Image (tube, rainbow, N blue to C red):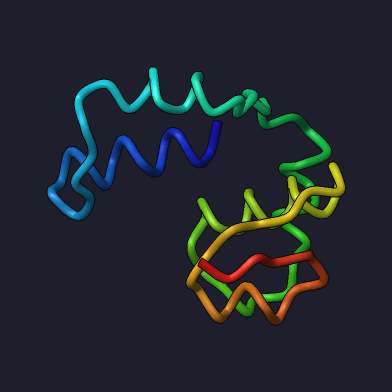
Length: 87
């Protein structure tokens, strides 16, 4: 959910260009929704302060708890104990 929220905000302020049917593309590519729960919030709040972006912090926390890999170009995320696939 954090990624969808961030994508929507960045598209609406002109920082990201996406097709109007981006939701359909997400569904067609097999991505599943991951709600933000209490454990994710606690983990994000307790992460070291390497990164101040709240969206990235919740994504990092979710990846740690759920055993997921983050796809990113943000080198600051490499400072956390989380698998990263560099985009």
